[in-house]
Image 1 (cartoon, rainbow, N blue to C red):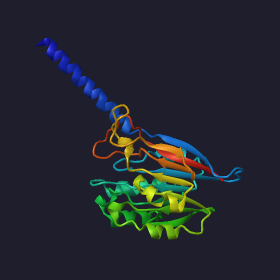
Image 2: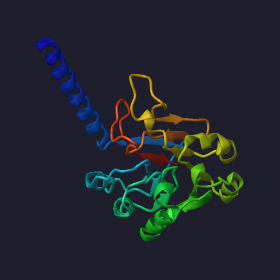
Image 3: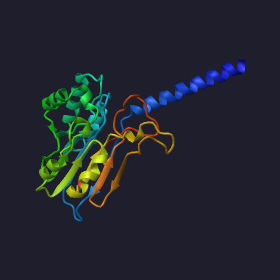
Image 4: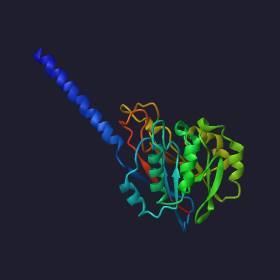
Amino acid sequence: MKKAKTAGISVLLSAITTLTYMYTLANRNRLLTHTLSIDPTPTKQLNIFFISDIHRRTISPRLIDELRTRAIDAVIVGGDVAEKGVPMERILHNMRLLSSVGPLFYIFGNNDKEVGRKNILQVMDEVGATVLVDSTATVPNHPRFGLCGLQDRNNGTVDINKAIDSASGYEYLILAVHNPSLFKKVEEQLQPKLSVAGHTHGGQIRFGPWGLQDLGCFQITKYGAKLISNGYGTTKLPLRLGAKPECHVVEVHY
């Protein structure tokens, strides 16, 4: 009986320790830096900050302080700034912080509709963000770059032809989507120098190499580079294991 009780206490303590670790991991601030050169003799640099899948998290002021030292040219928010139950005040607070770093561009994620498309648009309007719905905008101070954003299919029909048409005339393109499954639908036509996406959370909770989704990655492609992020926040459970939270600065040399 005593051995069983001791074993039970040991299991309970192990569970508490594991859950504490998973919760702590999920709330880390992890800023990764990636470098991409698209010209053999580059003379300029474009700094992109990409963050996706904020969900219920409150963005850390320390992260913002770090970004303000990086001369960010554009902030891309790759969808899922919220989910059901997230107060609008928190979303507005987070977007105000991000807009203080640099010009803000936003694309809809699949969970954003849970707090209302109209509410999200109101927040973005208040902070002066550019909302990209199958459309392209010029990157400030870098007129050779167009930023093409496709909304998530859960927020409405994705108009691929509209997005492609909007991207004409730019020397270089950055493609931003929420769900990376959209890449294959437009990459060949757009041939973006940089593609960014979130949505997968890197599986969020993984056991060794096994997870419901692949880990995020930054990889060189035949067009330039592709970034799929583990994301900043969590969904359903505020826990992570084997898939660290992350956000990104991509330094593009051209």
